[in-house]
Length: 425
Ligand SMILES: *Cc1c(COP(=O)(O)O)cnc(C)c1O
Image 1 (tube, rainbow, N blue to C red):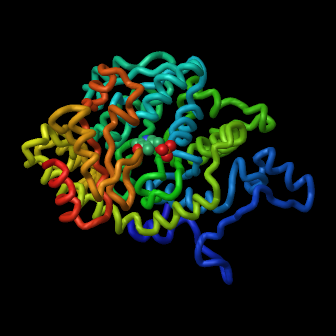
Image 2: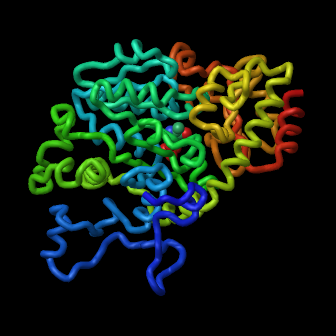
Image 3: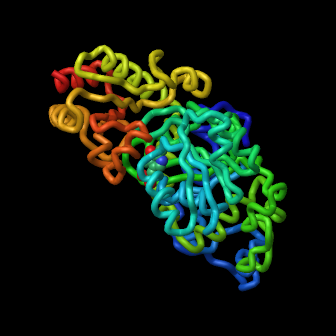
């Protein structure tokens, strides 16, 4: 980890060219890599030396960008995945297999909810959902003998609840398991969960990190702080020999700083192949270079729009943790004193119908299954991303039918407010 400030890290971390080498990260558009002898290649297959042999597992372009994200988060190692979904799947599945259990905040992204509650269940992994505001006791009660991890989102998409990361970390560590935090919305510019006790951080880089709506991607960062060997019996995959790599034990050979990401790359990337294309990694890095410049503007626009909406008579309720009246204001001030993100959600009069009519009238804000890029967009979760959820599940996740999510882009805030104003009227 470098000692530079976050602004400098956004621009410079991860890649340092040597004499006469390209200034910008090169796109290594090659599926495979050449070696002089079979012996050289064999060492790679035994994880004896590090290097590249096939882009299904690793590619240098991706690794430069992953190193930047790891540095931004203050982690020891990182990797890119093909999407945010793949990042969360890998982060959980790397330590939790059939028969395992996880504790998760109920206030999470719809796709992640489905991954945990439906797809991982089919793989024999069970989950207990708890409120993001659960007390220490309620959290404690959610743990089981077979619990392997705790999961939550810093700022939940789309409910915009803020997780008390310290409280969740304390509960996880008390039960000998790591805390995995999806930090997509604030990005490391506004919050670094590892500083508050998180062990693994994930991202949908598709959102603010790319920031221009051009490349789907994900990232996983390991803090390097979780002591796997101290909880050997819980994490056999990291703490006992892997026969597919000549019996190496990840937590011993790569220590706490490298074990998680090495296992994730060597086993899950090898077998599932959810790699980000080097071309997309290059685009992601262009986004990262200006992330620290863009985030404050997203926050400025989000704040202005949230303030406008909360004074409008057709708006029943506004969720934006940066608003003083928001129930998550205190937590947001603690974890994100410079602001969280540009996503605002609000409940409009008239439920689903009201939301549809309003959205049809918008001119600047486009209807999109997307958030967190340069162009303002909006969505009614109950009829789109969260339509698989029952009324009760929607309620538990804090998503009423008339909820509209507006992702404030980088346009002028007055134009954004005027657009919302005419649509509401
Ligand atoms: C979008 C999103 C995801 C999923 O990411 P994809 O890149 O779309 O696969 C996961 N978590 C959060 C918080 C998200 O906003």
